[in-house]
Length: 214
Image (cartoon, rainbow, N blue to C red):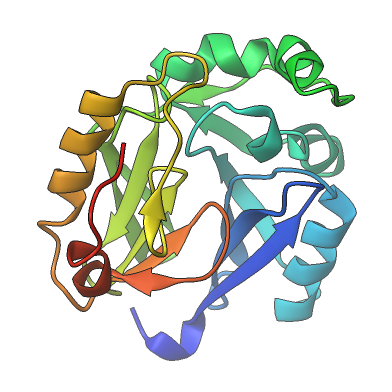
């Protein structure tokens, strides 16, 4: 796609500052929302800063932890036709958002039913930009990353951070499984931009030099 029509915008939301990544194709005025952790109004404001008529095609969830899904209801209420996509192995987590919040002593917002599931190898697209879904379990059973080869970017959720990786002591986490997922991610081209679920961006090349501490 033309880089002139692609906009990638990262918005930190909620008490835990999870990243909502807006991937928009301005040629069609549609976007994908990767994770909606909280503050749906802030997310929609940032969508409209790209274009007043911007609408979300789908909410694509990297995993089902509460700090990545609390804004889903607000977006779905505002845009009833938007899809809500998650890997099947994290559906139980998604549906148990209240129990998750209680474990952290935090109040949570209910989530609407998901509308579809994502499997390894699926293509997720908006306009002329496309991402390949990668199943990268370890942080959670259904953790997913999304790689756009053409645009040299991978959205990694809480699997890979700048200078580190996600924790494995939460629901369904596994250190050996996460280690294997990170090794797969590090096979991507070194100049691939990494956009994680929290914090700053990185590159695969930089993270390939980061030791895995689990």
